[in-house]
Length: 295
Image (tube, rainbow, N blue to C red):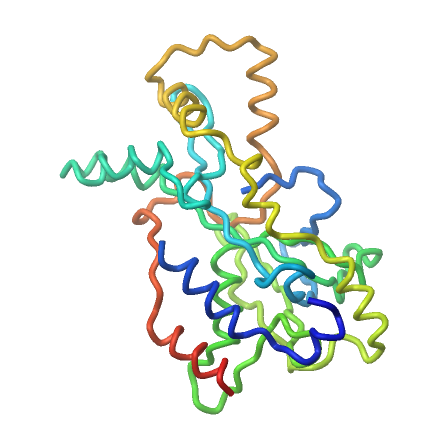
């Protein structure tokens, strides 16, 4: 979609369709300068203001969803994108289902440790970054988890009658997101983060157009090159779980570690417990989108 067409179309109908598709069935950033990540101060707190950008030109959805697995076994770490992201079977998921259905509490605990993790990628414009003011006004890719995505959905679907729905991805009628981070039990906590009052991103539309045109493509994250094959993942999983002998050279092990570990702003450690990740579509969310798309 061109910038001129963007102003005339909020695109909520397409957001509705895509959210429904995603809810019914990680690519590593490393030192990629396309990515932005907030930085904490010495007290363990962080603050920044960002604006979620619309879908890049040629794409319809302003975010992309990724599933990954991150756990440690006798043979090292397993940190890989899950094939379930692109609606394919994944060996860890297959093992976890067998463990969960075995009836053994020990097996269920193992499945919890190996459960998949949900992350999102979106383009954001940095409005304020006290730790790195040189980032302000620039567009980056931003990786975030379910906590922040839930706040995005809450903005779109207010819980109370006196609250007005907001499309956070709208440059004119959207709202800046005040990212407030605290260290809680050693992990990043986003509970105090919130959207500001809706307002245009910038009164100068040429500035907004330049920002929009610098957005990064999101469909790339679902390309097959970002995922290992089922057999490759199965071989690594069995090696990590100690089910097969590790015959790799030291150089191969070093490369595998480098490929696996990358920066993340997730707040949960690998062994976080809880039930295996499931996806569902709340009917009230869908009803809201349907109503909003027709107004």
